[in-house]
Length: 513
Ligand code: GAP
Image (cartoon, rainbow, N blue to C red; front, side):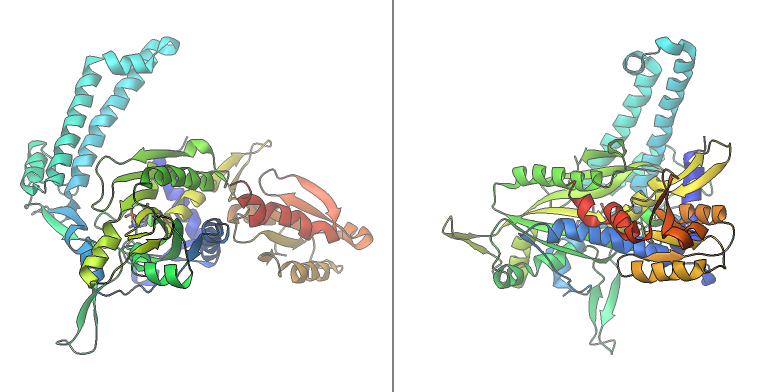
């Protein structure tokens, strides 16, 4: 069994080899935590975005979509709390000059303690064999209990210090735990400082008149400032939602893990405007609905779990993540946040404009509460891509690399392959491509033996291959091969389009919602 690191490395190299994800500006040695999507990646990303948009906007009468600008009036970010509270605690090592997130250094230290617990479990499991009871072991073994207590105490202290903005204590904790710089091994640390994650830029030509702007760190604020425009022009009645997809920017300090944490990324967010007091019920509803959306893609229920937040963001009264099993473990994929009236009320305060809804049923105006669902498109891409990449042992002892993308999301739905480059077979294949291309992205491939072409399409994630052979000349039938089962069937040429439609059409997938 390959370890997590090897699997993740394979994901990254496969994404490059098959035209999914490239490092940005690679010829200049890349730009850290910025990535480009290639010919297949752009299609997969577009399909995920469309799958989300259809589920949220097209299928919900009371949700509409907008496309707000990335640049916003700078006061937006004062009102939203991002100027004052969108910070990470940073610490520099004086010897290596490397900068770290202080909380991540502490969390990595705790992870080492947890690894010791895992080691104890493995040792005991080996010693006790079939009679090993993990639960009992965890609750009675003194060494494990001590480790666990130590880990809990560290996290509790850090949580409290961060909440109280006591950065001196965060530094004291790092020193007490004798945490060393992973690069130099030195324990010579600076003080911990808050660092704002927003990217700044300037609007205007001359330095003295230019206005300082931020690149938006979330798409949500474009929805809040347009709340009344949409409500009035769309004659929307509460409860209703506004959705949008678009780029967001964060100057992430710990930006490893490929497209999991990027400096420029895309979000798919929906703000649901509700009557104050109903937020608990909508919070549960949207948690459930969003989980159903994920499950409809068939990537396995045991790959998802909810994680309820204890430490809430500055705007929330309840929050949960939908976590996914990435190659490096369970991590946040999507957030569901009960944002109260924090944003709208603050925009009222800072803009001096009323952002209220007149409720005809209650015969009064109020600032609505908001329930938000927020998912990173790139992170969803990584979830889909990494989960789909598999090495499969075949009956003949060989292995095949196959990218089992949900067919509805695959960049190319079908590859058309003439068995030979002669006898009129390419002409029939090209005719079929011309017919199918109006409905699907189609690949045409006539190079190499057909077995090798199947393998290429498997690795690229194409769900179907259609092969034109000599029998096609006689009876207008072709072979259709299924990527996941490798099953091949002889079908009529005229039926190909319908067969593929049934498997890839968003309608059939979204009906599972
Ligand atoms: N409007 C709420 C908001 O932005 P968030 O939890 O900071 O909440 C929401 O972000 C989602 O955006 C995350 O669950 C994640 O999928 C994605 N995301 C956040 N930061 C990211 C980054 N640096 N790179 C890629 N995706 C990111």
